[in-house]
Length: 330
Ligand code: AQP
Image (cartoon, rainbow, N blue to C red):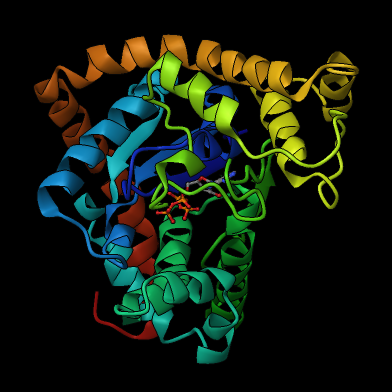
């Protein structure tokens, strides 16, 4: 029996945070033997927010290097740049015509980002979920590992696939979300009612995967805690402490209950240092590999080139079928 297929992508819109890692990337390598995996650097998506072109190019290489540093093997897994496979943008145009304004208006990310970038509420920001649907459906994806924040977008991708299949017969696999039990929504360190995001303007809100050990521990020491003194998981009453417990549990691969038991009777200060230390320990080997891989740009270019060809070959089969079904001459 052939393996089920996984697709997932991360935007090179900033340096990756431990939110991106614990919510998504950490699980990618664990799945590469059991599934056929396709992981994308989704650079087209970043243009929904203004980017500096030089920085965007550098961050795209950096994200590819991080994928590999986290254990993804470009021989086993297809690792590529979204803009290298034209089918993403082309299929997105077609799917735009099968998606309703009302559906897109309900997307919370659109509402959040429109508030954050009130001077640049562009059409791409609005149709972002359609491009994401194209990314996923192009590869006949069975499973999409994502953090909680992307669940709504995955649901719209499923709705579009079902709608298209009803009109034209089976065309797309309807994908399932795969959301981690631990770490699915890591919150900001200073504002724990808000998701940790790589494009946050306050650097104390996030911890980057490539951050130095001392800086990581310092950020955790400064993390906002709550009134009281008990290390207890209670997201409503204790959002700061609960977020730190979630980070610790996901970092160590244990349950929240186990994490809570470990810190029963601990003072907030000691607890925060322990969380920072665990995160720094988890990241140290990744950072060492990342530096080595990033130093060899010509190797990264070879990986991108070979993998774009592999991805294009898969994508073209779906896109050709779609073109034929909607009535284009193929
Ligand atoms: N705080 C988070 N906790 C858990 N998972 C998260 N993800 C993002 N933030 C958290 C997951 O990371 C994957 C890649 O995300 P993305 O780059 O495609 O876009 P995003 O969800 O918009 O991530 P950011 O960091 O918030 O980026 P910006 O600041 O550019 O918008 C996804 O699977 C996501 O769920």
